[in-house]
Image (cartoon, rainbow, N blue to C red; front, side, top):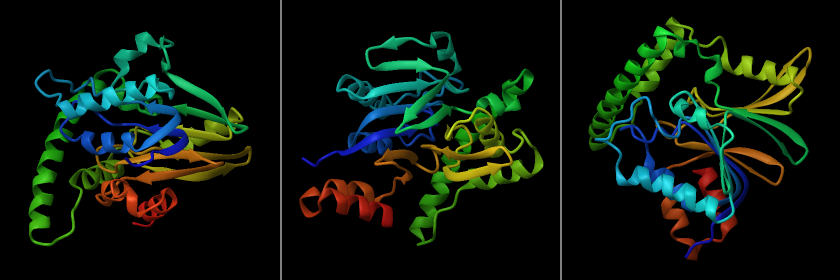
Length: 272
């Protein structure tokens, strides 16, 4: 049995359980490999916009079971609501053992004031009739993911690199339509005004860690990415935040524990 990596804080977002694009098996393997003191689920964990009773595989349910297991074994779990799981907002501040549902969160992490929220508050596309269009867009996104997986299977068959159709489409949309006016800058500027040291978001599926400054101060902006395309999270340990990126070699490394000590595993993952 391999040793789990101990983490002070783990942040994941935009898992979208209940959709075809969700990489639930990979996420489950990842969650089983770590032991965080605090686990923050930063929105869109369950995709209630596109939820269908005809599609919720066992692997998706296993992710929820693993999260509950982590809570029962001592991890403090915060479920921050997002736009795709906004139905949970009526249960804001509900606490069940180590699991707590919140809309936003401010934590003191080793003396740093850290503001954490999903980020859909900036997104005008979920207001009024545009929200209906966004839901329809989610269905199209699901279909695009399925088509993309078939194309990537063909590309791999012929020894070619994978491609992401959804990223190409979103890049095109970003240039044509501005749903969010510079999401990262807006989040950072608000955090500076509130005198926070760090601000952590999800929502835009773009993993990021960067310092943002203006004439009022500096803040570290972070985004945990997603488990649809990037398969990323934010990990905090020993005073340092880093982006974790899951890849195909990850399981081979952690399940061959007898050949590597824990530091070797982390080094190989980060170097791959």
